[in-house]
Length: 103
Image 1: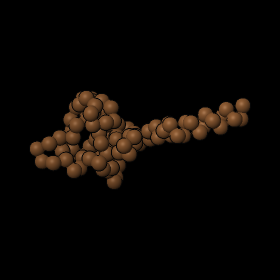
Image 2: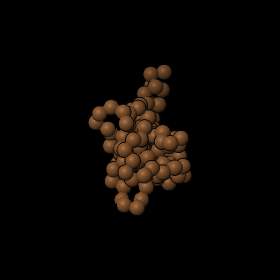
Image 3: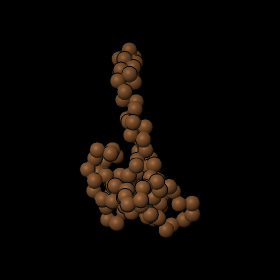
């Protein structure tokens, strides 16, 4: 039985299951950064850039509710947001946390 457990652990590690993305609860307000002029921050159905767009956020929005974060397999972080009735994911490189309190 011990050998079976060791074998399963070994195979799990080397097959890449140890890289399954983990989600982290945040629940804080963020503002949008690094979005070019005349562009918007897309909200996506899933945490990857090929995922369907389900909404958008203005480049100068200062109050976006972030629920949690998730690191994708490509090492990029995504935030789950709730914004004007739309729930979805945005790339974390375009968001910064408010230093103080609520919006």
